[in-house]
Image (cartoon, rainbow, N blue to C red; front, side, top):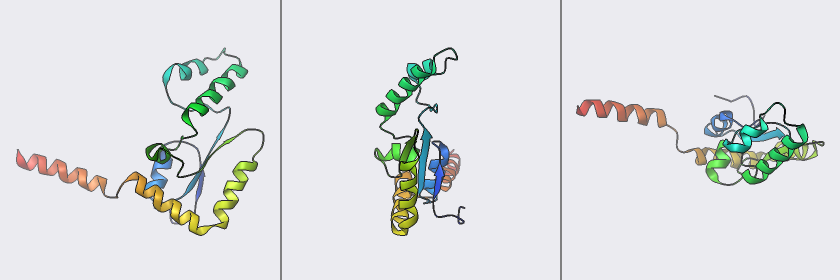
Length: 140
């Protein structure tokens, strides 16, 4: 599905699961002021329009620490960083170094892609689900 690139730079979301299923390595980036889900009281509070920005920053930084930077679905499933995640603040140096590391090491990209795909499970889930539904109705 994604034959035209070796790795992607993306933001948290279901796209990370799609990339992982296709064995495409990626780098997740998120600005330190960006809102991301997670639910709970903190998420409700930080969406209030009248809350001062410094407070929102503190809430988001606490949430980043609590999540341990596991923002991508495959990383959450694995319980560790399979694909790198970078919180960008004033400097893009960490993001740049991760990009250069991925560009310079095709074997690391290959390993990451295989590991991401393994975390997401074996391919063919749609066919297995369809077979289960057909078998269920055949038994009726």
